[in-house]
Length: 184
Ligand code: KMT
Ligand code: NI
Image 1: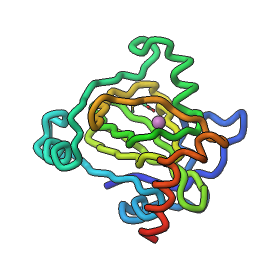
Image 2: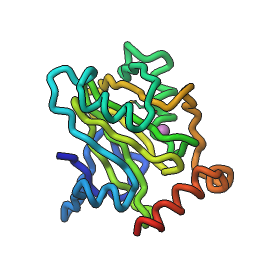
Image 3: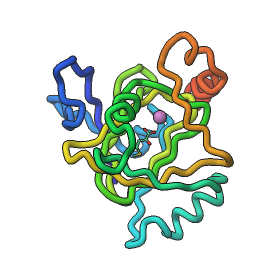
């Protein structure tokens, strides 16, 4: 099952790689995650996660015809420190962000409709789709290691738009908000 919870805001000296569960613990179910953030999630139980028939089916249904693999760790990712910083700056994209986790773990934080941070733990076998126009960020866990497939419809566009006036005015943002209101 998905592991997602409300995390509250971090202060400057907080370690982003820790779980940041609150007291009392506020967990979200799969349905709540979808209703409040628009995120989609599947657990892939197959031994061979990358070649799972369920992943194949989802790729065909949703048109994910592009795939590559990214490893985020100090020795595998070029410009690690810079990238890790930019992953954790709140941003959106013009398209979905789709990650299938092969090894390791990390956290995707995504804003809900009340602008609260929801933290989603991702580990081996998790397929997470962050909607186009949703504000989010990513961090590794304390082990500093995650390997994931990046899926996309067509030629990938990874450009992050940091949250601000420009990103708020984007078509993807308007579409996302429209979808979230329609679904409520
Ligand atoms: C991203 O865009 O935030 C990433 O690719 C993070 C690493 S993949 C789990
Ligand atoms: Ni992103």
